[in-house]
Length: 366
Image 1 (tube, rainbow, N blue to C red):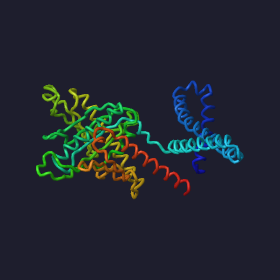
Image 2: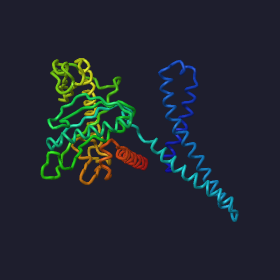
Image 3: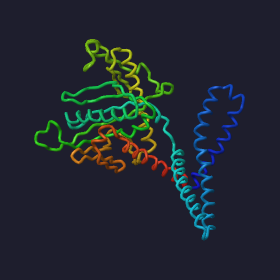
Image 4: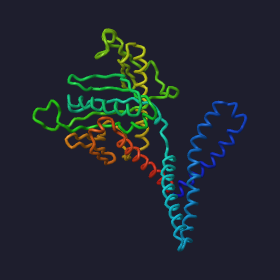
């Protein structure tokens, strides 16, 4: 392991000692908020420090095993035992090194949050709306696999099926962290159901994944900056939802950002949900602007998540999915469309981790 990482890990060991001392003080025990804050940090730091201690111990074991192997001479039994320990220690050291390097990577505090998933039909007319419906099904199936809950915030269905646009709220552990790389342009190549001559068409949808804001730190919105319109909801929902002005559309006048909700019979609950979506969109706009300022010239391995990016192609005739950001190609498209997205998501997360590690090393050598 490189010297830079060793220095970082030694700091975790030092900090663990400091935290254990602080948590033993009586005045800290009386301040519950501070005690909980230090306890959470202690848990995180201890996880790293414990692995680092194990890594160092296994390095010593490896050194001793190699010395034993050299001293074994013509003793085959001792040589076999020493060789076994060399292989065991080498494998564990490699595993611990990977874990420790990933634990040192900067964490996005929003990764653990719930998320809003927006899908909008783009070029391709009815076929684009049908593809949007397929994406909704894919993500919904993936959420079911993960045990996450989904609810429709707003939806505009197309005449032939699918959606012109739809917003889902997804609730569960680490939703945003696992889905955030889905933001961007998704392109499909296939023969549409409406095509009579068997020609392959190309259509597109845009996907945006927004972290649900923490209410305690959510962006402050001036009520004077909002225009709130109510209207009669459309679509399924029974007589009540279609005969009352329960649907709510909220416009943030300074930015022009709009959010709406028509899922609930209650106008008040629809307003609350629409405000959540609006807050998430404003927060995402702020995040994107900060990222643009910090890295105006940078084209990252993962991409900016800008909705104009073409991040992925779904080629049905070839059964192929290609993620253009990391040059990943998988010939299991139908399985992925059933919600088995683990290979795609894990590859994107691994690519980001590799990029972050490279950036850390560059920063350390600068």
